Amino acid sequence: MPWIDACATDDIDQEDLIRFDHDGRTFAIYHSPDGTFFCTDGLCTHEQVHLEDGLVMDYEIECPKHNATFDYRTGEAKRAPACVNLNTYETKVEGGRVFIAV
Image 1 (tube, rainbow, N blue to C red):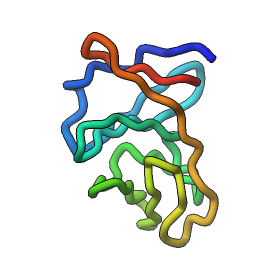
Image 2 (spheres, one colour):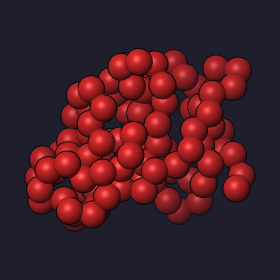
Image 3 (cartoon, rainbow, N blue to C red):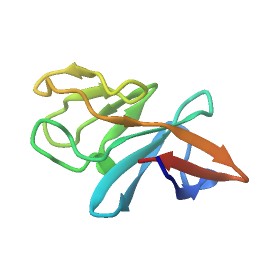
């Protein structure tokens, strides 16, 4: 599985996310309250809305359209209308850059 250089660590404020597009796919990269980085699919599993404008609180992302929430560490759908989990992707930080395995 190749590692993709997605962004700089300081591109994402804590408790926020950025959108990252690669090879026709959209991802969301999160900077958690404890300083760890996580990555999920960038589209809500409910109606394929981009999560980039969603609200990040603690370890959850809330979809901006219908307020479904997911635990971005595991991808688990936490609140309806979403009932399908998000895919998650391994991340690593090297030299101030965030890499994702896709």
